[in-house]
Length: 56
Image (cartoon, rainbow, N blue to C red; front, top):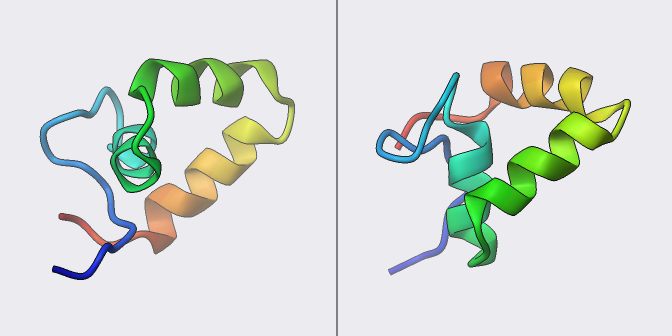
């Protein structure tokens, strides 16, 4: 099966971007969420990905 980047339907708080990215990279979604919150560009990138990334 091909590995695809997509928004998660099961591991989501807002739009599923962090959950989908964590599944794709094979790491914890909590770590991704912390990095998004701590980085200044992370929130803008999250919103961009929420619009661009397809659903699972």
